Length: 432
Ligand SMILES: *Cc1c(COP(=O)(O)O)cnc(C)c1O
Image 1: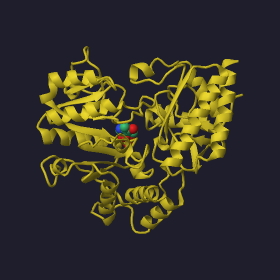
Image 2: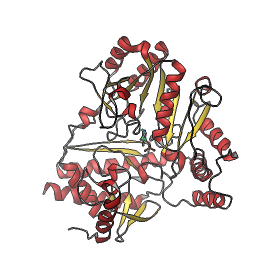
Image 3: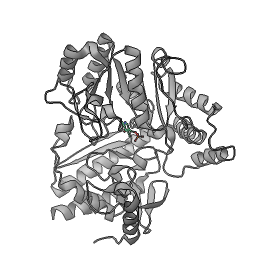
Image 4: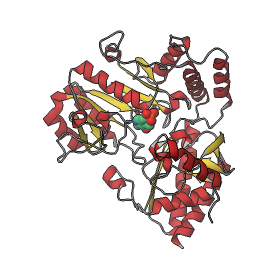
């Protein structure tokens, strides 16, 4: 069966004439799974609808922000109310103070916070601040963690574990990554070796405290504890990149789940409620170094935009008031267990995990991976077929085996049942 998608095909061809690859962010182009990306016309609750009228249960949720589901009435109302008063002023508003207070109330490690326009800006700015605060240049990141597309983060490991990295993209000068060290995720011994050699030069360690950009990998408790301990000892700033995990895996993000306080936290996705927003914040003493209070420069024409603040505030307040995380976690767990059963019935090796409303599915693996190298042992040929089998049956997974999936509060029992029926059919077809 092949779903007819003439309008998506025409739109993709048209977009490709003027937009490189036809998309404004690469993974949307279906490069990892083949085929034509669906052009979306509308969304509601757990569902999105494409230009050809097909409806899909949406497990991307705009890559994380839409935890309340699409078109949540409270968010829409907040946006409409702000629209009546203006779209952007480039001058301070009460909304920004409310947002900063709310974020600091919700995340105990935040004493002060600065709003920006994307997760990329948040991590770039946090790194600059850490460097300005410590007077050091080096940064340690982990293989498979994604921190946006800032030059210093687009790095693959150097030739040895203790060497500085080389750029993964043309256009990134070697000089931009010459201060970036990498280590495997969950590898405390490697981190200890990096600190032994470079500890005095490290401005920061940046980590996704639950990694969602190499599928979905949980940290070992002892790994995060080691990072905290080594940063304390050397004076490096510990940055938790919770752009994805913040307000997604629990009310206090991964730092709440693992009970570790980073020095700085980067946020994005959910904090904008679907509008382009990022934030970074943390210890007051570090944040005080930021312009205009301190010397570390950072700015943004649209930062703290009132529409974005209205959507983000409405989203965060609704989450805080409705406390949906236990139910979200239970439903996500149920989904992953359903996949496990479907895979077992089809005789397919499978490992899956759920962290709050974030999940990872690994086809062809017997146990959960701990790092990027282990993720790469999953069966690369299987995922595109499973992805398309699900899409044909009205389920929209992320079009890559290296992305986590997300539920919203609008994913109810009917959506889970429909997804698992599609999963059983897809896997049966695959192994027939
Ligand atoms: C999405 C993401 C980013 C980048 O955010 P953008 O808004 O896409 O720039 C950074 N870090 C993590 C952990 C992310 O998931």
